Length: 202
Image 1 (cartoon, rainbow, N blue to C red):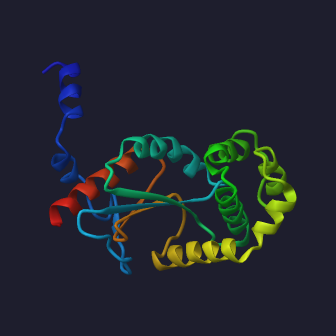
Image 2: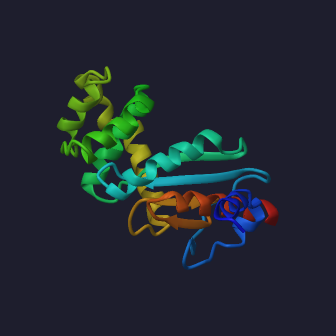
């Protein structure tokens, strides 16, 4: 079989064939303390990340591409991990950006600023200056940064990461049950395979 034909055949493998190739302990981990499973016919994928993580930066384009084409019954959410004070600062900034309506415009830009331009945006003051570029007035940013609403979201993020026993990022959790780690496109293939597996199980 010619090489190009083999590649074409592999590209059109059915989802069940991909699902059968993922291996527990290699491609994913079954969580010992799973979360609440979504309703029948619904699926959930949560991405844990930190803006200062180069592996998260490498994975993000693959995630963004998949989100554009994922099935409608798959709910996707990003969760900024807040497992230490520096990560928490970026998590607070993320939730302020979300509350201010600038998250979509600033998300990848903050990744680029930190990972490409090497800007040290890891505290309240530097983050206030960064988000000001997107129209968030520093006074408004600072007010929201320590607000009850943002603090509650940060606590929820931290508790979820602890529940899933995350040891690092990036990490993607499928249906509160499977943990997938890594920084390349293979991660998305594993996530898709696990969704297919859950679909057949239901």
